[in-house]
Amino acid sequence: MKVSFEEILFNDRFDIIDKVFYISGNEETLIKKLEKQLIDRFYKLGIRHVERLDSIEEYKENSDLFFEKNLVILDGIKGIKIEKIKNFHKNKNLIIVSENSRGDKVLKSAFEKEKMFVLVNCYELNIDQKIKILSLISKKHSINIEKDAISYILENTANRYVFFENEIQKIIDLNKKNYSTKDIRKTLSSQVNEDYYRLFFSILKKNSDLIFLYNLTISNLSDLYKLLQVTKFCFEIIFKSKNLADLEKSVPMYMFKEKNNFIKMYNRIDQNKKKTVYMLIYKSENLIRKNSSLYFSIGNRFLLNLKKNI
Image 1 (cartoon, helix red, strand yellow):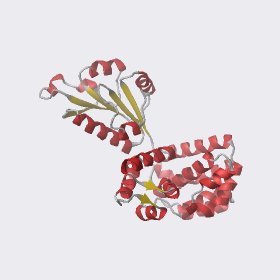
Image 2 (cartoon, one colour):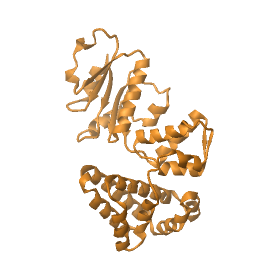
Image 3 (cartoon, one colour):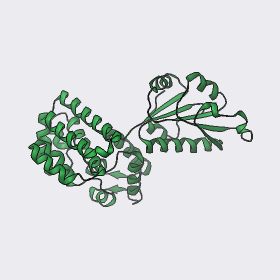
Image 4 (cartoon, one colour):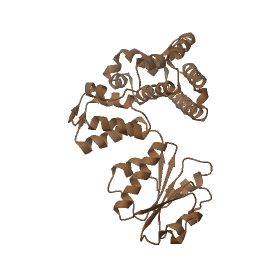
């Protein structure tokens, strides 16, 4: 069966007994977080011995001679078959950890169908997942965060899980019950500034203005990731708005001066353009991951293509 990472991280009642876990995806910090959480939960069940292997064939039956129960963590899926997993799992607890790889679709499909097999996909957080996590944490700690403060958090925190978690922990550590935007601004390590908004909305201007601002703003890979973060956040607001009135309500107060730019962009975008924007972001992020040394030209081309298609 397929399970969300939130179900494991935030639901203590999730039953892990007699299940095989397959943690996959491309977000390394979330993969590590899930692995640690599962190890801790197995430890509470009395499992004290953890053995890490590259393949099931490496396992030796006498390796757990002094342990009644043990946990095997398999790094990778090379040569692994469902029948092997079933036979191995009869008397062993098993967690398979592997980032996305060629040929993993068959294994993932099998995990989705098996009731006692659990597939957890790990990718960078989207807006909805951040909102859900914030809601769960707020409920757990009995805290209240005002609407504009939530928008500020969503925009100014990283999309990689552990970095996001660290920023939220800073808020919790303030030990308050109610949080305003002012509180949040003082607490978070801001990921973006006005330069990135100015650059994002330059896609509404001439190419020469866009290129000029891009050269001024982007000087390293981190700058480009911040721009992409702003881009996704702004489009998320636009795409989720059902009409102009809804859009105006969705634009956070601290971004009020960009309201007209939001409206201009909203009026230009239809359903087909939404798909184009999603694809441009997806392809650009993949290119950056594979060719990080070419970040500057990839980012420049990304903005020009956005301008061309909206």
